[in-house]
Image (cartoon, rainbow, N blue to C red; front, side):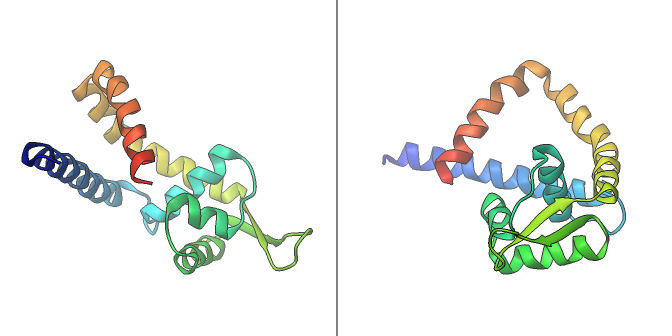
Amino acid sequence: MSDDANTLAIMLFSEVLGADQVLRGRLSKVLPKGMEISHFAVLNNLAWREVERTPAQLAEIFHVTRGAMTNTLAKLEWAGYIHIRPDWDDARRKKIAISPAGRQARDAALSSIAPMITKVVEDLGEEKVRAALPILRELRTKIN
């Protein structure tokens, strides 16, 4: 890799990491009290997909350890946002589903972050956002 390509790669990742840090900070401020970004992400995934997941599947989806996911799921279960049941086909596994309270919490979180993310899209312009999405998706799959 040439020095110019190396500098370009460093600049790209610096911007992505910087955007991630700023976004996480802003999200943390507007999410409902007590909800963490990881909680919202799991609830959003369960609500959007509308299928039960195992803790291992969720850990893989979010690129975290099983222990970290178990911790997040315990907090969500304690809050009443998810249901955890045994897997009827394999007693060693558990199945996770969003509860009605979890769906309400996720919807409240979406309502609280919508103005912020809508403003970002308005400021950038829909055309730029639509152009950036395929690049960001491809970047995510390449580093996965």
